[in-house]
Length: 209
Image (cartoon, rainbow, N blue to C red; front, side, top):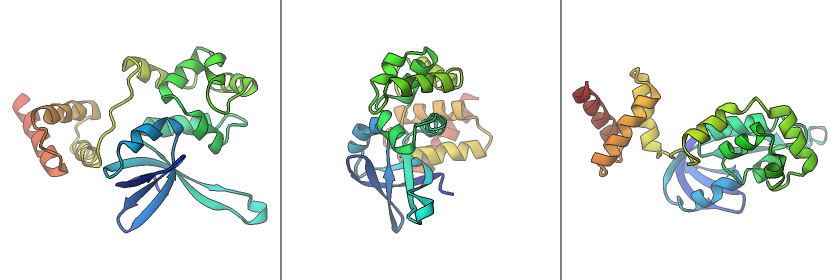
């Protein structure tokens, strides 16, 4: 199973992107809300958190493999939950996510069907079903959004994510590693490679301790 892909963003189309990962060029469908951010990242290296699924009619033998990519892992988790609602399929969900998932989660928890109806492809009946099935189940996403005062989470480069993963392997919790990385980026903006970021993060941590 492909859970994430790291590579160079080569092209952004209307509802999908093309990511060069090694010798392979992958096509990934993406949420509508991420398109503007992705268009400004063409040519850059980034990590997409992915969902693999088969599209088509199994009875007719015309199934096609598809990949969906998300800039943030929490967006992928919300998408998994969102598509458990009856009538909300993959395509519908991708089009509907025109707002940050945390803002959508807030609306669900507040039972704000008017906001949900404003999402592309979501009618009154669908909005009512979303609230009925998900209210009380997406609080974590709503709280994360509220804690950030409405700001979207920072998107890390592939090198930064690798440095954070290396810290995790050393037993450093993610929140602390994030703080170390932010400090290094502020004090040493010329550091972009994984090894130099990690080395400086560990040095800062040692000095601080």
